Length: 268
Image 1 (cartoon, rainbow, N blue to C red):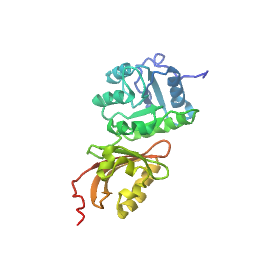
Image 2: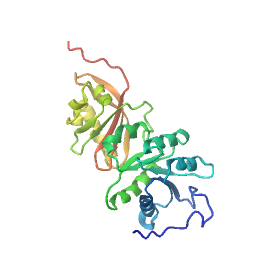
Image 3: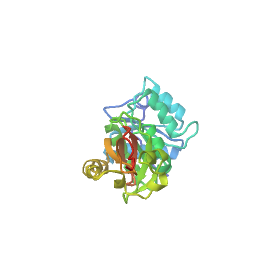
Image 4: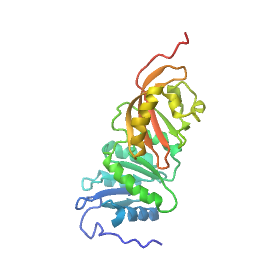
């Protein structure tokens, strides 16, 4: 049993939970597992975390929404589980976005990343971290919360075009999974892209740009959004809107949409 030494409670210092104190970050954690809630609070609030914050825990997504929408509370970041009663984490965070579009939202869940990749992108989440055994993931959560707050909350703040297709690239730089929309932009079926090196979907000049300007940003824990040039199966090229970010296990999560209607090659 963890012997958690909590800092002064909200009641003791006479404030509403969720109200920042002395410049500390205010984090709302939503998870129906009370024991895990204590663990998250322990790691985020401990003195040697490098992050000065106070954590408010809610087991109910509905109650958490009430807290967020209350004029008496102000949170700097929301961390949510996925599998919960009343609504899942994506549905909860989408409802948060309705009233607080700039609030950083982080999904901390036991679900496999590839199963949630499309939902993560389309819900506009700031970040995603998979739960794991041991204390390593909680230590990483501290850094992810810090990064989420620094990101101003937007998972895709620079690209106005909706990102329609989602793919996951493994640590060997080859696609592990793409959805049908992602594959269709390049004139492939999903199973034809799976196993391909990501560079096969871009002209040589664009590959050089990605290696020198995009991957370094992502490898440092950031995300890259912007325009790049895609290469279709027939050799024709098109302009794409793209987001690239790194998952906690080193794989890449990529979302893309087509920005123009460049004609396909005719074969003449």
